[in-house]
Image (tube, rainbow, N blue to C red; front, side, top):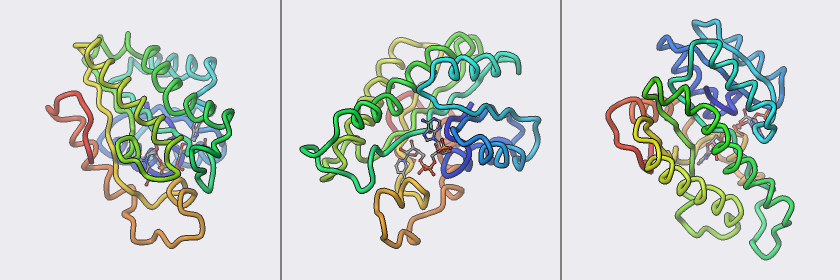
Length: 218
Ligand SMILES: NC(=O)c1ccc[n+]([C@@H]2O[C@H](COP(=O)([O-])OP(=O)(O)OC[C@H]3O[C@@H](n4cnc5c(N)ncnc54)[C@H](OP(=O)(O)O)[C@@H]3O)[C@@H](O)[C@H]2O)c1
């Protein structure tokens, strides 16, 4: 299961896994874009489940879809929000936008993991929470997003301690040429950043091998 799999890193991970024989359960809010992306994946049949990760009914539908397909082996919590573009300084952060950032980037991934844990425990599965260098580096204007990713890092560590039968990773994929990255640097040329498809194989070999639970940089 990969959240935010209609474009960017999530789609690159889905394409790489689907090409290796995995069955994908994918979500994103824009149903048309998600449907086209999933229809173009190799192998299958795969499941496109449109919705917002902050919607508890939608999370239930994701977990039920995975169960119907035989159970989840891997959850990639990839869907995320920057909050606002351009990124504001902490003093200018709108509290409701900050709450929404935590809801999307921390509360929803932890809740989705909780729903899938019965399936993952049984299958000695893995959880990948996609984090960022902004969770550890104090970049100016990155405080809202960065503190949400820092919370996700810590939740990943606690989950790893609580769940001995499930590997739990927080993985920083590095800078990538995506819509989110462009929104973080509006008007700037980001063509020197690598495409997500160049990072996906390395990220997946890291989390599908014998790597210990913890925070890793892809
Ligand atoms: N790009 C970078 O340089 C970079 C660097 C470090 C970490 N990351 C992390 O990498 C991950 C992927 O980022 P990306 O750059 O690939 O982003 P992206 O290209 O903007 O794609 C984001 C994906 O998430 C979906 N999404 C966003 N909000 C959602 C929600 N509330 N519910 C369900 N789906 C949602 C989007 O589809 P809809 O809009 O249709 O929902 C889309 O499929 C994120 O966790 C990000 O924080 C990225």
